[in-house]
Image 1 (tube, rainbow, N blue to C red):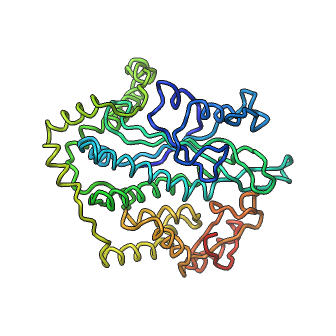
Image 2 (cartoon, rainbow, N blue to C red):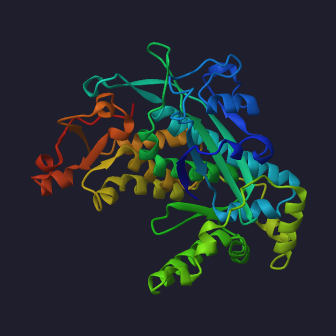
Image 3 (cartoon, rainbow, N blue to C red):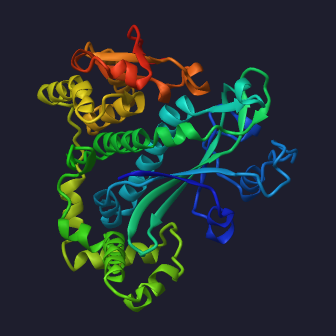
Length: 415
């Protein structure tokens, strides 16, 4: 379960016959009078894609009429394969509940990370005049249900448009994209934690953590045979790696036969039809009884986190400065947020997670740093430029401050 960020390149993936079903606006500030949560129309979407205001059609930037206009960014949020497998074998009512949980987790991720920390623009012409200005932004979230390999895969494409309505002068400017990439790991961690909470609280699904550092969440009782059956993408990627290695061992790379696989056109991801659902259930029935497996996973009872679970999360969050410092002398606020979200593992609701973030940033061993020569992002106090170390590191590395260009400051809480 990861997050990927790509620059928007093909408008037809989101519009016309190839568009996913029921794209929704994420627009809490009401830009262009597009209602938050309303369905995305092709006309409004394409206007923003091309740099023009919906309805009125006036340009939002000087590049709107040129080929140099950049439409924005696509943040792809992918649940764990066990979640897609549960969706595929569930009856219609529970499939819709899982789809709502995925979309709600995506919306909360946009709100808690992208809209909160990345809604800024860079203003000013000369390098010495550049300043960071906050503003309002909007996005469109598109659900997918079927992968390019025709397996069940619940992805959400969150299209963040390249437009910011600044608070200070109410002008339309281009989105400053760099913060998005700085937050990508925290975006993925937030999405999987908030989705795990929703599956746990709404459907009674038991979740567990996995990965080298417990950074991922999965359904606890999913049959491994279904995961293997519907993980063709991983098999395809591994086959490609093997083919590349084989090409390195041949005198003529063309003889390896990799050319066709690298040039073949991929199917596009899409939403599911009833024939897809019937096919998924028939495939699953060769391995398990879909109804029995579904009933063993989805339970009506929801249990609050036990005290030992809360204590375990608290201990792990207390240990975040030490674990980060074990690999990095200096680490950023996105690193801390990602570790906090991973530690929760779907045990707590959104309000509680805000409290856990504040708790982590108030750790006694966590030492905020300041720049000797800050760039505009740091001058503006953007969260991704907030860097930390630990008091232990400064005690054991006396040259650390001089080499890093950073110095210690008084601890400060999250803005």
